[in-house]
Image 1: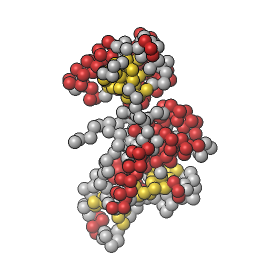
Image 2: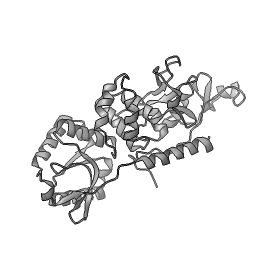
Image 3: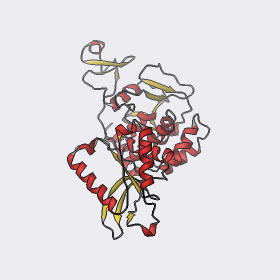
Image 4: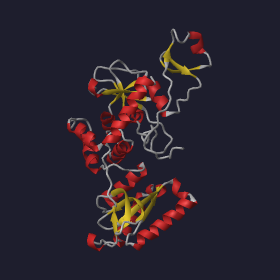
Length: 339
């Protein structure tokens, strides 16, 4: 089955590690058309596509000095967080790979990397794809501090959706690193994270609604049902106090069958007293106009107390600790068996 575009978990991707001229690669072969230079004295076969993010990371990781490790979005992707794919918000511009080398480390800088000289204890280093990477919590922590507050929250939610860490694990890590540079970004984003997001767009819409449109703490991807347990549908976001669902429509909602279902569900929600706000990615590019729409929809909502509602939300178990342990066991299998 083909992966959905916004599947948050990255499958294991085959990579080719660069090799140096020597026993495996003669100077003549290295200079030929059959190989591509990736760094000082490092080569891969010319057919290897470094447009694949994991391959690009492995090639840049070959520059690491002893004791260094990949961090930031690149480490998150190697751990399995698919939304942290090394592309900027435009979906085209490649982000540099972050290399953590410690206060005494060094690496020749190029346009494809950024270098962190912050302390790197060995207990924070794991191994993925045959290269040294920081543990997921350190990778998320480092990447969040590269962004403003809103995008830092997108990074954290992307990591949670990709099942590379949990709020409990990340919060425990954060507690021991309060003196870090730009910690204020972490302190703002952490209490606003909740997991369960289905796309980065959904996180951005949620932040706009909560921080600027007067919405309460939105619940994420919850099933709405009638009082006798009949399922109406699953909404992307919902303000339980006002009774305002928000549906975030990506490209897949342009399909005729999907549009028909969206209309049917929206009508069913209206019949039980829920006024839906529908948002597209293009509308988010004009946040002031979208903000006014969100405010208007919430103002039209009924704000019914729980005992007067004709709807309820189905309980959801958000504990992803068993899934994390399963993912880590699978990653270790790849490192030990497939290396």
